[in-house]
Image 1 (tube, rainbow, N blue to C red):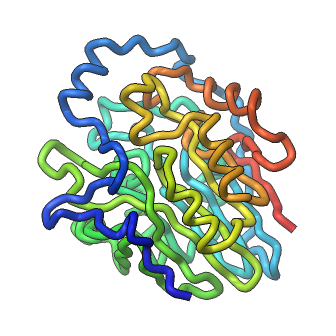
Image 2: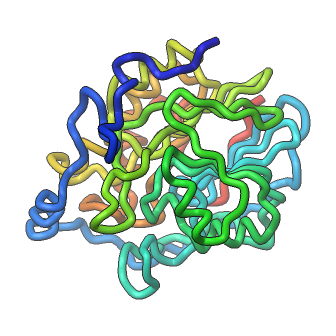
Image 3: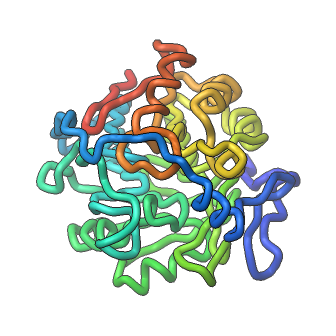
Amino acid sequence: MNHRAPPVFARHFDGKRFYNPNAPQAPGYLDVLRWKLTSRPDPSPRSVADVEPGIPPRRVEGDRLRVTLVNHSTVLLQHRGCNILTDPIWSERASPVSWIGPRRRRQPGVSWEHLPPIDAVLISHNHYDHCDLPSLRRLAAAGVSTFVVPARTAQLLRSAGIGTVHELDWGESLSLEPFTIHSVPALHSAARGILDRNRSLWCGYVLESAERRIYFAGDTAFGPHFAWIGEHFGPPHVALLPIGAYRPQWFMSRVHMSPEEAVEAHRILSAGTSIAIHHGTFQLSDEALDAPRERLLACAPRDSFLILGNGRFAEIP
């Protein structure tokens, strides 16, 4: 099957910068300034000590799929002897420096010493809460053989001494037994500093094996890409959907989903099971730390849209 992105998503690069085609663009620096000057964040505890660390198995053989939420958007996928991590972050801050920036409120649900061997790492974009170089360096030193990143992101990892990196544009694929990994559109942005805004791409991923389809949405606003992914690849057995960082709506809705929008994405995708990500570890916007979880509990189907604590897992038979 040809998995190239459809025409509505085909043009997303103007020769210098990437953009969200046929959709509102991500907020600019003046929008950020307006938000920060008017922001009234809801109060949240400085630290929440409710994490029960888990110890995943070294491998999961056969057609079973085990999905462990480590924290934020870091998820361990285990299937047919393959271990894949998404957007790993173990750092105390989602920031370029250790003394400022969003600070961790909950600990990771899997400690380094209990992390099984990782075969591949998927990076959805280069924001600090999704592309944490200290964690990536440590994974590379532990022997991770494959890092998959969006277009024009590889140089960031290579400059940090991180090994084999594969770049994928929307619609491109990589074979990694037992999966084929497809890069799919998302509505978001990318930047590490002031001068590199949208110089690299952002994406989600569809992982296909003989038995499974897994969709990792990365960071994304709500949009027509969900319908295309569901129609083009078929309903995912598991969808990892972000639910946090949605307030204030005028600013965040161009790059993030609310819990209600995540439920609608779950419906459009016809996902067998969805699992909430991008919540509960860092307070990145104005809603309280656990507000996304509470709103999702109020609107999501309990049997098919799961909210896992850090370190908790779901087994998909």
